[in-house]
Image (tube, rainbow, N blue to C red; front, top):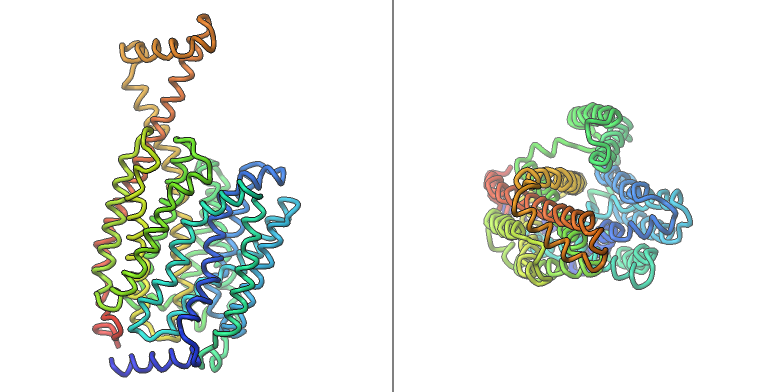
Length: 528
């Protein structure tokens, strides 16, 4: 085991080439932060984009979908492209493509031009996370990887929290176009730093890329594209009630099974799924998928609650959830220190447990809460996320050799993104359907002839008499009560979603303990 650690330390010294690895961490974190930030920042500006480009809200959602589809396709291809073109060269090219596409999106005169820019941007951004993570892991010896991943997590965890606040402020103060223009200076700085400080390891230089896997790419495009479109439009078109969705799901299942079989059995496939033979990586991939469901759902649902039920603007809703970023920033130094000393399973248990309990507290929300009511639990979710992302990565990659990390990183990040897409779609569907269910429940339990309803109706009539006159109070009062009914039903739907997300997080605690133990800075127990 000592020999394995020494080999990894020598590999880390080779890739850094005398450069302080923390400078390399800063360079690759810039690229990751820019890419993750853009995913959430564009969502806030969506209504403004639709209005400016003369598009409906439904058409504008393709601004998000087109990006995610291109992103998901490129993610698992990153390892092959690194071997074919050189990892540093490929990373620089991706940052340049992403930056130029960001400018084109900001300058888009029509929706079609915007969608083309988003596809190019998604293709450029897809490889940034796995490449950055692979470079980061290889630049540090095993004993320091936990601290390095804590820095990397700033980009992955904090960016989705900062995105809505920054996007709302830029949109309200300047224009939605600046939500894209902001990537240009960040991208230029990232290209300069990567060019100066990042170097390819010998195994990248000496390994020839295998022949291109056309079948692997084709099936990957079909199943990821079908998945994203179905998730994006499923609730809108009543899921399996729509014929086209049934056909899309059939294509999704067939292409996904074909992709898995092909990638598992073919020699040198585009995406090598045999890495799942490693137990820790398999369990880590399952947990990062559930992590994606949890974090993306909560970061989407909570601002919706503030905006739709409490009447907050996009910017003020972003401010209300900003404490999560503060909590994550506070947690990073702590996890950076503990990750080199504690069993990742204990850290993950704490992280998932705290996130689950904080989310359970969200299940007590009412229509009368103040802006500060959820301040502490929101900050605690950010702190908890620090204790999830870093130990998952440490445990998942801890049993893999350096030459497998590039391929594994692409799969790992794809799992998180797919989990996020599924989580957001599930949360939106549950909100819609549970609102309807609660509304029916309230109506069935509060009869129109009952004294409680009649008292409320009389009070509402009295309240609106000064605005509508005595003769018109009944319709106005009924409309007011129906509005209150809808708000209360929606509030209970949010409560349901928060509580179910809490159960999901607490269930992850049990999965954590199926990890093979990985000692910080040492090879895993029982590893060969």
